[in-house]
Structure formats: structure tokens, C-alpha cells
Image (cartoon, rainbow, N blue to C red; front, top):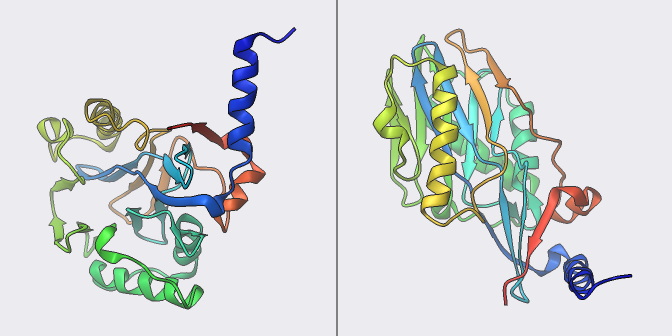
Length: 249
């Protein structure tokens, strides 16, 4: 026999199951940190995508890929999850798969990426001012992290240092002498603490994924690998276990 609470839960789930991605008004979230360590470059990212619906509902999907290994570099994206309903993660993975080894200046790959999106989606409108883009690699045996902030500011970190979209405890604990293994623990701690302290756990969270770039420019995932990405946002309905939703009146 169903209790009153059971009926409320059933009604709650029915409400969200009736929502479609055509009703999504905005998507946001993301936090990632890239750091130059003594044995390579480490990039860590949260994996939560938050969806805001027209009727006031708020939902999120975890295990979304936001960092992408290329042949000899890593791309990270924050600020938007879809372009004309296409999943940006899906498109960026296709981009990194198609791009050969990068021999140009890291900042030039930003130009390549935007042109690729425009080619794939001719009528795409990408708000570049609302995005954060970064790219990391070794060039001439020297580590580089290129960072493009939302306000258009561009930063190129060389030899030592780190980048993050907002200040966290990572800055007080970072040293260029730490290993990538040690940095992964600090980055994970910093992202979760930042989300909690700033009351942003609805938009920043999920598993933290890491990619390491070694000094020989080899690129590999550390520990977990994100699940496959779908071409369009509505395709996530094919894996409902990845969707957790809350209702906001």
C-alpha cells in the first residue's frame, strides 16, 4: 500500500519525466583547474550539467565530459553545454579526434575550434564572451596553459603556475614541485569545497575527471573515463539513470 509520501514522490517523478529538452531555457555549471607540476600538466574538471526549464524546474546531469584529450594537447570548455541543441561535449570530442597533432601556438586552436563548430552547425550562434576555453600542452619541451576568460582576457601560463575560473584553496597549496598525483587530490578537494562554500553544488559537482599530459606530450586519463556523449541534449533520455532532477517553484 502506497503512503502519502509515495504518492508525492510518484507525482514528482511524473512531472520531470514529462519534461523535454525543448523546454530547456539555459544550461550552466562547470569548474576546472589546470596546473603545471614537476612531472607534467594535470587538468581536473567537475562533470555536472545543470538544466533550467521554462516551468521553473531545475535538473542536472552528471558525468558530462568537459575536458578533451587530443593527440598532444588537452582542451577544456566552460560556459555553455549546447549550440542550437547540439551537445558541445559531443562536438568537441569530434573536433579533437579529427585534429592532427598540434604544432601551432595554443591560442590558434581556439580559432580552429570555433570554425569547426560553425562548419558543423552553419547557423550556430556561439557566445564566445560567455565561454571559458583553455588548452594545455608541451611545446619545445616547455609546459603551456592557454586560458580564455569570459571577459575576453587571455592568459598564457608557461613553465610553472595554474589556472582556475575563481579563487579556491588550491592556490594556497600549489607548488610547481608537487607531482600530478598530489595535485589531483588538491584539485578534487578544492572543487568540492568551492561548490559547498559558494552554495553552487547544484551547478558544480559529480565525479571529478582528470587528464595528465606528460613531458613527452603523451595524454592519458587518470582513473575514471567519462561515459560516451550524445549528439543532442534530448538523447540523454536514452540513459535516464544519468539524470537527477529537482523542482524549483
